[in-house]
Amino acid sequence: MNTTYRGLAHGLAGFALLIAAGGSALAQTYPTGTIRIVVPFPAGGGVDGMARILTQKLTEALGKQIVIDNRAGANGMIGSEIVAKAPKDGYTLLVNGANFVTTPSLFSKVTYDPIREFDAISLIALAPNVLVVHPSLPVKSVKELIAFARAKPGQVGFAGSGSGSTPHLAAELFKTMTRTDMLHVPYRGTGPAITALLSGEVSVMFMPAIAASPFIQSARLRALAVTSSQRLPAMPALPTVAESGLKGYQSSQWYGMLAPAGTPAAILNLLNAHIAKIMQHPDMKQRMTDSGGVAVGGTREAFAEFLKEEFAKWAKVIEQSGARVD
Image 1 (tube, helix red, strand yellow):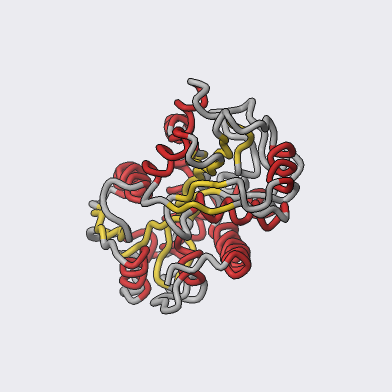
Image 2 (image 1 turned 120 degrees about the horizontal axis):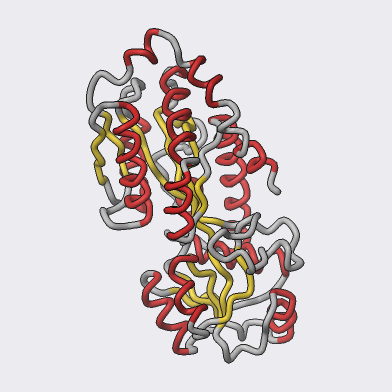
């Protein structure tokens, strides 16, 4: 298991300690007014959905109103910049996803630094992809796919839901680690990419688990592995890519909460403790499982380390693959 994930597992154990650490006068009075959570994407997407699920529970826990402010644009940069420049008082927060650490490497002009300008509050949940192939492709395992791709360089096409998207970068990481030459075929979103895969226009895709599930069950697609470091609760029989012979492989969409750098630690600790408790509740864990994800929570320190690792990893993958957006 990734060392960062081990750290995340200790979140609940430190719950009482975190509450105590936030026991200053500031933490005891916070919040006194409405909290704004900026989502840097339109309503209805994955990040927005996760933010709304969490906000409902966090509102109950804090006893104050929390509003979602969708500030879409520039691959999440507009909303992220708003939070980076907001007052450091805990009343303007950010819920973002994996693009938060990949955007700086994908664009030549970036308006925020994901490491220096933000304080990590909590990793909320993971949403792994599933490596699936069209049934016509004569492979039934990750090892067989690697061998097939090596035998046919440049001839195996994989669908991407946009350049620099999580499914695209998951495949680029796979290519880099396996030293294979597969052809990226970009589509305008997940829906068109799935349609192309089902028709046999392309043969491979790293598809969000919740989207892949019905097609796997109906045998319209063949699942080879899940991209997370551990097996997915919703698909316990499906091995991970790492288990399948590609040691160290890990790629997931993720959702996390952040604050402007310099926000008082007492506030960050209080929010972190509440999120840890919310995400470990059996109902929330089941809700995440049903949606093809994994509830996490965990410590602020673990999330901060996770962000640094993800930023460095994907910067290298993007540089090697040439997966620039501009």
